[in-house]
Image 1: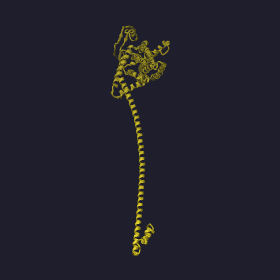
Image 2: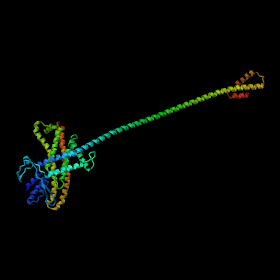
Image 3: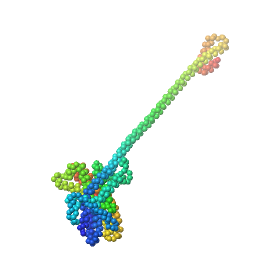
Amino acid sequence: MRKAMVLFACLFVATAWASESGGHGEGNEPSVPDYILHHVADTNDFELEVPLSHPIHLGAIPPIRIGSCAPVMTDHGLQAPTGWPGLMAGCLDLSITKHTVMMWLAALLLIGTILIWSNRDKTKMVPRGTGANLIEMLVLFIRDEMAIKNIGKEDGPRYVPYLLTAFFFILFMNLLGLVPWMATATGNLAVTAGLALCTFFVTQAAGIRSAGLGGYLKHLTGGVHWTLWIIMVPVEILGLISKPFALTMRLFANMLAGHIVLFFLIGLIFILGHPAVAAVSVPFAFAIYLLELFVAFVQAYVFTLLSALFIGMAVATGHHHDDHGHADDHGHGHSELGPSHDHGKAHA
Amino acid sequence: MFLPNVLAASSLVSVQPGLIFWTLVTFIIVFFVLKAKAWGPILQLVEEREKQISAAIESAKRERAEAEKLLADQKTAISEARRQAAEETRRNQQEMEKFREELMAKSRKEAEELKLSARREIDEQKTKAIAEVRAMAVDLAMEVAGKLMSERMDDSKHRALAEQFVKGLPLSGSGNAGVRRSA
């Protein structure tokens, strides 16, 4: 939550400063907030930033659109519809943007790293070497500490591959964003929403699998008298949606806010206009960078842990959905959510 | 000038459906590739290892219990054997003692018997010898007396006299002395 407050404060300062500095009419030199917003935003333009010089334009991937994409009139002229309005109009914008490329890069790095490190003598029971041991340690940690503890000994192992993939994929995207010239795919709402959707689907599938379709639907009614369903069902559905929504916002806000803070600390030098500011802001930025490295791991961990929790709750509905277990589930869920929020606060 | 920045900032929180689509596709591909190539084999290996370890621990426990049982058996067997050996020794000693005592008693009895028979023999011989000596003494006395009296004495009369004399002699050695004195 603190992360989100920092984010919005930064956005506010950015807009305020931009409106002020823009008033001075500095020509086509971008202001610091403009630069930061440009940097963390998703575009299909690729630039290589060069120190002490203008960025080199690497070119743009032409937008890919599927469906009836007749150009419509916008503020910027005649353009093909994008985003949700475009989707409503029957045009799916599948443009390959900076964050898409970063995501693919992270995916390739992830697959490459895991395949190389997990490639060992399969006839031997015990791993040899740092990579194989590290992977096995993380696999065992996620299996024992997340899946089995939160989902249960019976159903836990089934969801381990999903949790492992989520953890490593998010971790690699987070870490890739910390490499110079790269961008943070997890600092984009669409990416985190996509990941949270995966968890949402897996959670619902787990619920249906454990309770059966009837039990799952019955759970949605909250076990109250049918006359109250009109109130209960929307509340339950809201409860279902709020979980992935929390996942989406948490990961997005944490990754984006970290980068904005980092850039702002460096940007202070230019905002205040004196090189001496660097003596303060560079060490600070360095500290924030280290913190961001830690946050990259923590956020991957939190996302995975919460996914495991949600799956565990869904599995639990199947095990005692016919008695008063409904209230139990929610109480259980809240009590379990407590420490993970603390995780979020600890680094914020 | 405020508005474009707000719009730029709002682009941060806008959600592009295309990117959601790409995220889902990428995630699913990554998931299946890693599941098939990495997580599956690793988890299988780990499970197999855990099974082996628990089996090894189980069998070690069982073998240990078995070994302990065997050890206890051995211990009881050894103590039993020791007890038996002690018993045997004790019995042997008793038997030996008994045998020795029997042997001693037997030999003592035999010695006693031997002594008794020897004494009897001696007594017999002694009586015989005494009788002989008496007869000889009578003959001798008769001969001496006959020679001395040169046929004046009736043979039977003298003999009876001599016998009477001899009878008056004591039976033991002092008798001999008497015979000698009378002779």
